[in-house]
Length: 203
Image 1 (cartoon, helix red, strand yellow):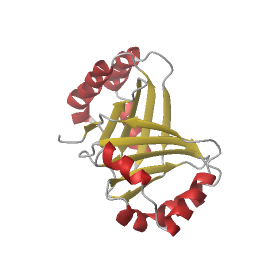
Image 2 (tube, one colour):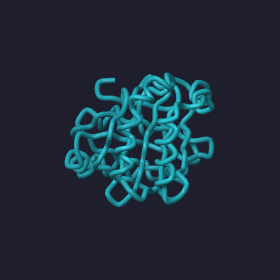
Image 3 (cartoon, one colour):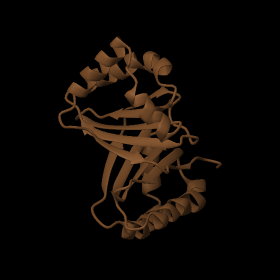
Image 4 (cartoon, one colour):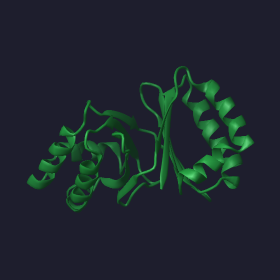
C-alpha cells in the first residue's frame, strides 16, 4: 500500500468537502489503484486528507492525468496557506485497519530516530491493543526510512477514545508505548478529525 497525506489551512470546510466529493464523483471512476480516502478539517481549520493507493506507481499515474492536474489547480485555491505532502511507501496496517464507519479519526505526524524499531513495537503491541482498547478500530502507520512518521487512527467515537486514553494499560503495553514515544525526535502533532469524511471505490 502507498499513502499520500496532504494538509493545509482552509477558510471554508464546506468548500473543501465539496472539492473532495467532486474528485470521488468525477475522477475516482477512472483512477488507478485508488483504495480510499479519509479526510476532515480540524477545529483549527486545517484540512487533512489521507489517500490510499495500491502502490506509488499507481498514485503517480493518477497524478499524471490531465483531469487530476485541473482538479488540483482548482482545489489549491481553497487553501489559505502552505500545503504540505507526505508520500509513504511503507505502510503497516494494524487491527482492522481503516474503517469508513469510524466516528473519530486522529492523524499523528512526527519524526522518529529508529524506524525499524518503531515498526517492531507497533507489531508487538497489536495483540494487547486488541483487548485493551475496544474503542480502537485500527489504523495505518507509515514509517519512512528517513524517519518521517504518519499514522491514521480510527476510533468508534471521540467520547470512547477519550475514555480509552484514560484507562491504565497493561504493564507490557505501557512499556512498549513509552519506548515508542521516546523514539520521537520531536513531540508528535495530533490532528483530530471530529467529523471525518470517507470515500471508497464503489461508494
